[in-house]
Length: 98
Image (cartoon, rainbow, N blue to C red; front, side, top):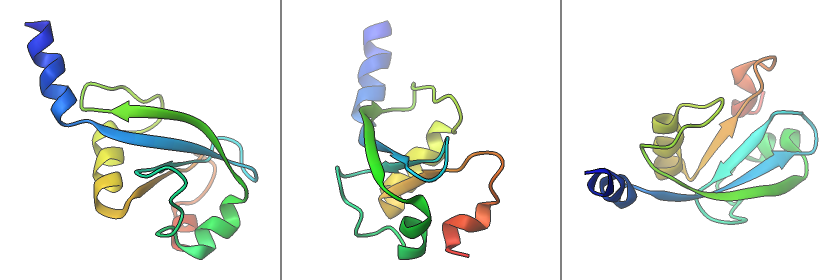
């Protein structure tokens, strides 16, 4: 039974590359394509600073992320090609470039 469940998750998997911000601790950018920063708004990239690759992972519904909702991350990766993990002390308007 466990193998069936894992296979079900595997079919819904998304490869993901996670980058750390050089400007803000605990700020991470998840990308659906490695080094694909073309769809990231310029104001966001300016505030993010130098992006350093920290890991490549395969996300699926069975994953647990320490600070993010897996369903939201996967939806953002599918719809816009990226997901921004914002530290709790930063206001969400940052991702709109303000």
